[in-house]
Image (cartoon, rainbow, N blue to C red):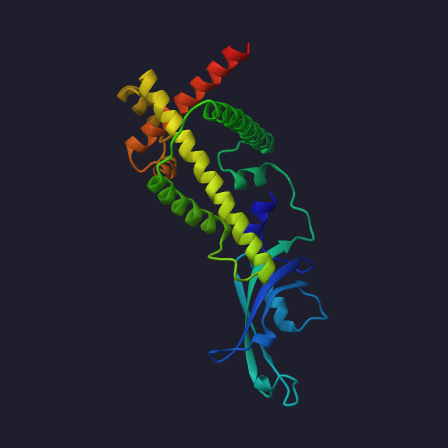
Amino acid sequence: VNQWQQQNRHINPGDTVLVRLEAKVGNTLIPELCNPQLEYEAGNSAMLPGYAHVIGKKCGETFAMQITYADNCSIHSVRGKTVDFTGTVLQVKFAQPQPLNDRLAKEIDPSAKSLIDLKQKFAQMIQIELSGKADQENYDKIFEAIAKNSQITIDQTEFDKTLKMVTEESKKMMGIQNFDHLPSPEKEQSEKQFAADCKAFTNKIITENLIIGEIIQKENMTISPEELQKNIKHFTNTPEMEQTFRKQFPHDSDYEIFLVRDKVLHQLAEWNLIENS
């Protein structure tokens, strides 16, 4: 509900907003008047009138205001000038709680028949997510046991190539290019920890792929064309579903690899269950 509110609900007087303010005179930025995170109550009479322009906006949207400064202003660059401010809404704390009813449920998810139906869908999603985490933990233990009792050789060229990809993707997910924004001691420590984490994850995924590849070859595991198309059809019933599916699996062969890997994981779990029973 909070996520839906942030994306769809308009700001009203009394709501608390967090905004990023950028101040300019013409095309010249005025750093002294910029504020990366300014929190205030929308419509507060103690604020200058321009700050009320945030009312009616939504999170992520911008609003503009102008402030003219006196000739004796402490900031020399804006004395006697009109400053143009652009505010970007970062977050909203709504004064009035969002009513939870069937109408809201349908706005959040048009396929939901009622609020009860929506709650049941989210409950199923949470259950699947928790189940997936438990499965992953189980698979990790199985792979660790196999690796410990196997002789696995990782090609250095393949490792370096994969490490580069993992490092770049990790930085994208974290929204950073480097750690230059941190103080020197903290920067060095963060860089070392980040590099170690990337190397450990790279070693993990290459090891898993080698084990899975060996099992596929020895057990002759495949996916039939009919099974492949049946699974693809299940996830591409609508244009929206197909668009989402193709973002992850641009080609049928990509999904075939995923299915074979999934079959190996299920087989490993079954073997582990038999061995421990």
